[in-house]
Length: 207
Image (cartoon, rainbow, N blue to C red; front, top):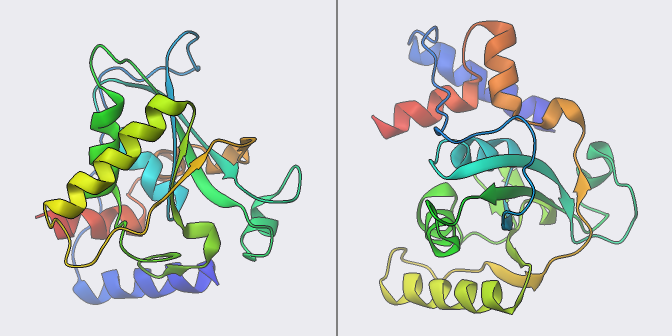
């Protein structure tokens, strides 16, 4: 199903007739190649983890990211298994950040107002299913309170015409995604010499 969606997106880009040679991957200044010890972590689900990870890797203060699966019933899930929507897992990103540069509240505000649409139940764009649900997996009571307050604030500010449906739930076992899914868009652009179609279309929308 995802292959068909990507084909349709590629076809749309060809019909637009716009060049795709320019690099579109944005990276923050603080990214590390390995996960550092002693820093807080945020775990978030908001649609395709390729897209969500690329959004956070562009922020200064983000030190490390990795994608994976959380919130399901089976152990050691694979991408193929969770893509069926039958395991109960969500595609998530784990964000390690420097709180001196980027507060947890800032990550939440970005998540709820820019990184994805928190008002669509089990859907982000063309991706549908419970694996694409919007969720904040809190690591402690402080993160839980911050998440609930931020959701209330964004709703009160009428950022969206519809109410936020993001679930606030305790963190569970993080099953790390397969290596080729980690920083997928960056690897794709490096290997192919042009941005992935989703990155291209996203940048066109920002213009």
